[in-house]
Length: 501
Image (cartoon, rainbow, N blue to C red; front, side, top):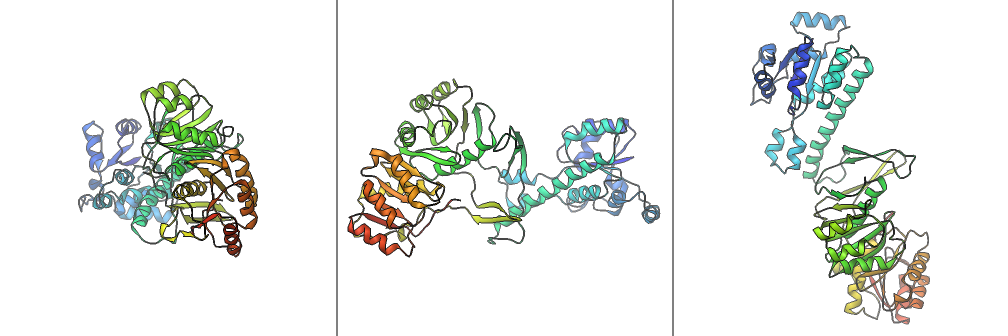
């Protein structure tokens, strides 16, 4: 039996090769792998001894030869194949051990284009695919973690077809992922928005306790890593936690000021900005001090001792922040189950394309990465918002962007006072936001993720809201503006809608 070993990742390869030799396998190898095995006194034959052809083009061509691929693809039960093998004096190869040039690692490390190109493996994927195609006769080994089980199976004569198919599946999965990463690198260099094929690949990170519900299994797969988060304290992160964390961080990164976003079931239940984390948290908490219980908090700043003392007072599932002072950690770590997550840079991850599952496929769109266009803001009412109201209106519009449609945010002084969201009728969202704002509503402003009608204006006027920001664009806009002028209300049209389904 013969095995061709050519690996970039040489973890445990010496031990694996030594076990194969002990089982009377002949080893063929290339380049650095050959050198490693030779230095460790493993009997090994160089590929060029088999092919009669030296490596060329600075190692770009090593194994691309009929005596290699013929030996891999030879079907042992095919008469014509046997005849050809004999005529061409090709010896069978019964195992390929290969992993690939580290293109993905080089990409992650920010290597230059030429380095990336030279780390696109050609011979490796070719051998892997050939061996996986002929899995009935050839073992294809692509993961160092499989070395032990393969040796055990060989020793116990337990290499059955299921075992072979499992190795083949892993091999094709590896080459598919590898090509996907390369494809996406070139796609990012292209201006083509919607290519013919979408190739997204993610790497298994860990299994989760369960999915959205306890009867659903779930796992976390990582994509491109720009800003890896670090869990500093607490129990395992769940499926829903990860989704809520994402929602909270996306909202918090929208604000330049120190901001706290409290999320429950992916929906903000309070957002506050201030001169300190403590001030921002108080504003976010006071928007809905009941829903925040068991919520997820995202803070686009460092958590200090004063803020930690307040966070410690209520039950929170997760606090994601740019960091925690030593004193803050000492306070918060007293709670066993709270997860403390450090995400140093809230802006250092890509939000370029979003996907949703639909009937028999997916729909794709750009992320909603625009808030508003200052040049297109229109004050359409006779009454103009004050400078203070304009500041509050822009804050409220940032908040409403991250709420579930139909949604309304009533805000004042850098704090959401009442949030109404996820309603099938916009006036119901307004009623909900007004009720939650309570007595604090006097002097507050309102933001809407979509246009609204006269009935909404009547509700806001009755509650004492004098300034409103909304997209505009309805056939009823004229009526809305007339109502605003009749009741000395200020209304701004942004021309930009922020639905979130």
